[in-house]
Image (cartoon, rainbow, N blue to C red; front, side, top):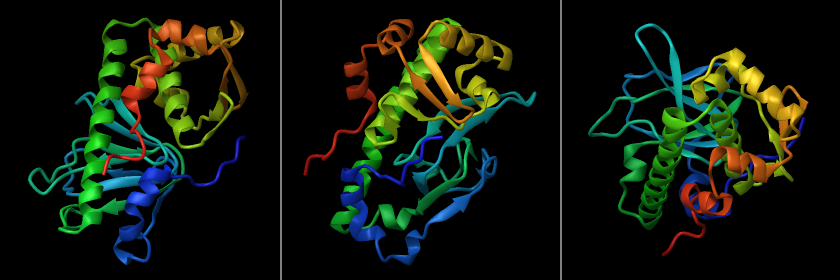
Length: 243
């Protein structure tokens, strides 16, 4: 398995340094794999900064079926709830052991320059999240199984590469087949068959149960119907943010 230290993007780290460092309000919290951080419709008026690990944001049908609508990766923000709408829109579940920080409304709405900068980062995070969501919905609505899987792998790779969590095109992949199916709108069997075809076809390689390498990026991009350079511009925050 790949081993990486906790890394937050430099721009984000510098932006938050003055209000995070030495402030007991922003203590690091921990959750174990499969632990629920917040349930859909729970009272919540805070944001989360993920320092390490993966978190799934999901919605649940009355039947109990689950759809993961986004995944938080190291360095990501998520707006869980606000003062005006103090209700969690999604269930947040740890896909691995995680470390994170809660940021409350008083911290985000303060008059100081650091809080203003924080609001700027939050706004940028919301925009890139919307971009990712629209790309995923396009594949869920119109894409084949191969297109959905290729897109999901490329999105995860692109986001992890931006925070120094890849080695070449290899990265940790702690998500189970079931959860990956919930993210791509597919059954476990369909995910397994598609991933196996990718592996046999030389598109990907599994090192072990918890890591993966993308061998043929151009082929995966063709399946996902994306231009990788343009894709990075659309779903990643550009650091440093303008003053």
